[in-house]
Amino acid sequence: MSLYINGKLNGVKCNDCGHIRFPFTNYCNKCQSENVSSYLIGPKGQLMSYTISYTRPMMGKFKAPYAYGVSRFLVDEGKHVDVLGIINPKIPFEDIKIDDEIELIEDKLFVIFNMAGVEEK
Ligand SMILES: [Zn+2]
Image (tube, rainbow, N blue to C red; front, side, top):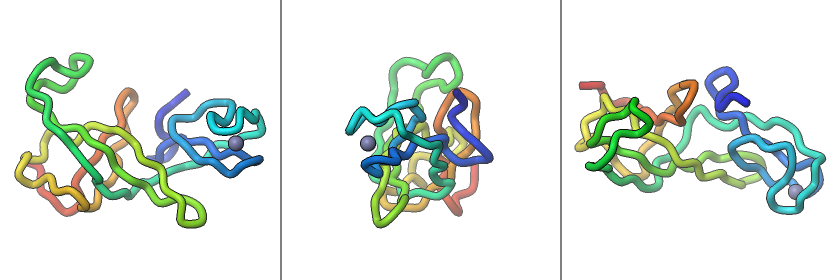
């Protein structure tokens, strides 16, 4: 199952209780219903928190140090979904600001956040 569809996260919405989450699963993790549909999330969100890893590379693709964090995406009826992702490694750490807008970067293996309006180094 791919992480992205057309630049958005491939999430899931429960047709019984309305719960929305990411990544896609063929059941609802809140009420266990199997009456679910694909639900696309993003591409814009808000960075809620982040940290910097100085230790191991992430699956060989991102060498330490790299930043990762949680972004919040607004979805139906004032609800939101919080998603963990890597912050674009070409963004200087000093330009990563909590509460700032992020945009998704489509990738096969990772959820990647780009800081909106920040130039890559
Ligand atoms: Zn449900």
